[in-house]
Image (cartoon, rainbow, N blue to C red; front, side, top):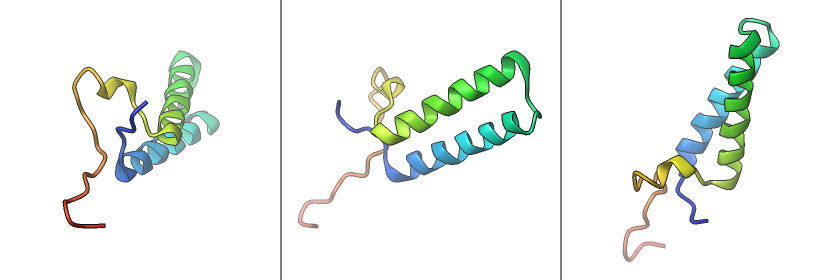
Length: 72
């Protein structure tokens, strides 16, 4: 698996996942929507940890910053 998620993308996903978890934990969102929210939060955290988003592949997207030639 080639990494296709940059640092900013990963941080944003973790923040969104944390918000989703808080909404579920506080009972703001419950029932089916709550289960969907928790599932999405889990997927966001998982993809952030492995730095790979399978949904980016079909579109050829990558948020990984390219290194410029001559820079370390």
